[in-house]
Each structure stands twice: as structure tokens, then as C-alpha cells.
Amino acid sequence: MPVMDHLRELRRRVIYMMIFIVAGAVVGWFLYGHILGILRHPYCSVPKQYRYTPSGTSDCVLIYHGVLDGFTTRLKVSVIAGAVLTGPLWLYQIWAFITPGLRKNERKYTVAFIVASTVLFAAGMSLAYVVLSKGLQILLEQAGYGTQAQLTVGDYISFVTLMMVIFGAAFELPLLVVMANLAGVLSAKILKKSQRIAIFLIFLFAAVATPSTDPFTMCAMAIPMVVLFEASVLVAVFHDRRKARRLAAERAAAQLEDDEASSVDAIPEPLAARDDSWSETT
Image (cartoon, rainbow, N blue to C red; front, side, top):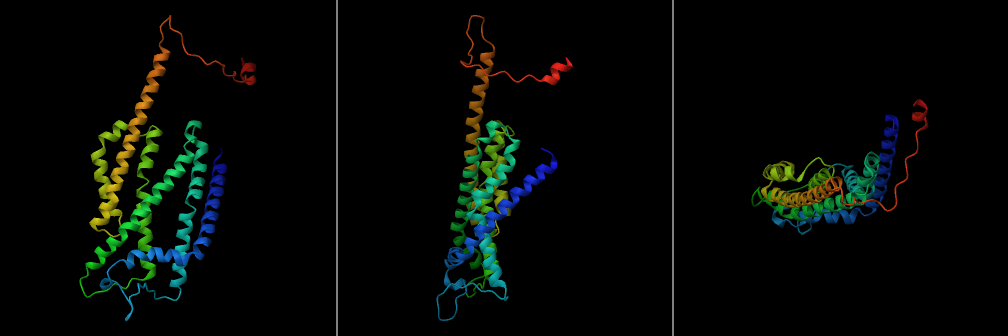
């Protein structure tokens, strides 16, 4: 395809992605109360003496200062919820833009790519949500007894969503490793040799990427990533062994003895169409 056609196709895919996210944001706008309650739960799990509670009550309250802060917070939560709810749809648009450049045997991984990326991203976000309660408690307790945190709803939502997005993106690591192995970029031999360096880099990434910067959250991200990386290395090992056996069988079939029959297709493939321009020149 010419460059302009590629750009038009990219524009079309981006427009589809925006439409899906906007439609999901509309749904998220009406479900804002339920979504905010779910996002607020980790903060409400912190002991009362470390979080802000109005006098005479035991409510879990997030505050805001500006007149427009409530509206912008609701809009932000709605857009994030729309992106999460419509994840498989816009992920398919990304894959559909890449697919024309792939071979036929590589396009069959479309469904597997969408399902695996969605499941891994959801698993990472779920783990982040689970560890948020403990991570927030560790951070808020550092100020000592007799202090309370008055968190604004905008800052808290930004912190929670950033944590969940980073965990979700980090859990895509095994999918990238497997795809690189299937494409022939990373072999199982290279992956096995670089396991120690990879584990060190995973822990380094977890220490830098986690917004809370506490050791508990870092280990909560790094340990599952290491397990997923080791699983992707096993997948690469099985794939390379299967590929090696197939290539060995093909080489053996190409070097048959004179009295050994070769395997042929029962139905021959049709001949390619003759190129008239080539025949005229010859």
C-alpha cells in the first residue's frame, strides 16, 4: 500500500478506537457512583486513625477544593472506565492495522492475542487493586500516630488508576516475549541464558514503576512478573523444540535414499498463472 493509504487506514482505526472509548465513557458516566465506590474501597480499608473522617461519623470521605474538581473527576473516571470496558474492541483495531503486514500463518493468532492481552491486563489491574489496601496503609502510617490524610478525590483517583494501569501493562510482558519468539526474534536459547539479567531488570522496573515506591508493592508486582516470564520461557522452549523437529523432518525428507519413496500430496496444487508479459519478452 502507498504511504497515504497507510495513513488513511491508521486514521480510520484511530477513529474507531475513539468511538468505542467514548461509548464506554458514556456507560461509565452513568455507573460513576458504583465505580467510585469500588475505587474508594482500598482507601476506606486503611485504619480510621490514619484517614480523614468527619467529626462524629465513621464515614470514608475524599475531599476536593475547586468548583470544577467534581466534574473533572467524574469525567476522568468515566473515560478510564470506558477504555477498560471496551479494551477488547480497541485492541482489535490495533491488531487489524498490523495484520495486513503479517503472513497468513501469523494472522491466526489474532483471537489469541486479543484474549491473552485482555486477560493479562485485567489480571494485573486486579492484583493492583488487591495490594492497594496494604500499600496505602504502609504509606499513610509513615506519618505516625495522631496524623490523618486528607486526600483529594482527584489525586487519589490518579494514584489508583496509575497503579492499576502500570500493573496491567507490566503483565503484558510474557505476551510480548511469546510473540517475539513466534516471530523468530527471540529464541529459547537466548531467553534461558538471560534469565538472571531479566529477573534483575524486572525487579528494577517494579521499583521504579510503582507509584507507591514501597517494598511491598514492588514485590507484589515483580514476583508475578517473574513467574509469568518463566512461563513464557517454557512456551518458547516447547515452540523451538517443535520447530526444530519439523525442520529436521523436512531435511530428512529432502535427503531420501534412491529406493525410498517420498511423500507427495494426493491432490496436486494448481499451476500458477502464466505471466504473458514475461513470455512476450522471451
